[in-house]
Image (cartoon, rainbow, N blue to C red; front, side, top):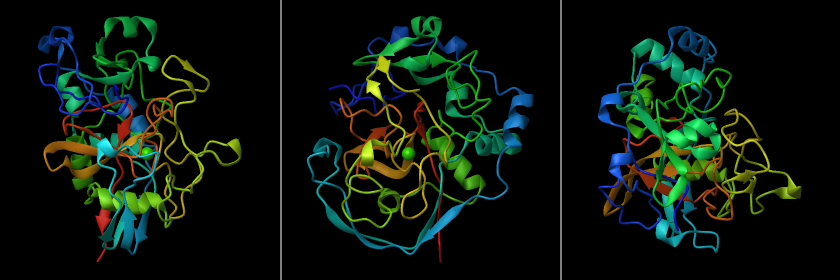
Length: 321
Ligand SMILES: [Ca+2]
């Protein structure tokens, strides 16, 4: 089955060993390198966004300890390496209460002039349902996952490509950031992306072997607790699709927002012993139980470290002595 989760920047000439991976069929459909050099953010937009970055980063210190990582339950995807459940020891660390926001990333770009992989290569992957009909028609579909489009000009400050803008989304998670971009931001603030064990320890919020950061039931009382796709995927959503503010929804028991849903989050390390792709955790606004229930504490997916996606961002971690 094709996956929503993580198409790869590597084009159709390279086929993933995993069935869940989607690749582009025809490299000739991809944007030509001649159009690849995308322009940077408008300086007024950049300073408007950067001005909305909070002064302080909210980090939650966690003492660490032993916990049961992974899942073997009926919701899990064994092919993703979710199992077996194993006891893992995590040292003390601190993790951000939210993913890095558009405003925070703008402050980084304003200070450093950083250009993301998407900006340098001139495109990124966008959910087709977010595109205007003309952009949808003009962009190449990903093989096996036609709801993914390779969109020219799509990047963190232009999430749906040319003509779109991150204005009005200053407090949303930054998206279209590769792991290389996430690591560049993290080192700028003296932090790093969490390990998978840290991410999952944090996501569980002190609970043992629960699929959701708040417990066993996805929508307690019928009320959504996270931002996932509502309605019939991919063409008939019953609610707005896309990111919501990084502090939307109640936090988990550790005070952490949107560990599951909203955007996938980069973690450190490789997807598997024989798979050096990067790892993403937590699922996104594109997850729907009809085809991809990766909106859970133990769920994981993979893509290359240079891939950027419209439903993926990151949160920071730091060592605590
Ligand atoms: Ca998330």
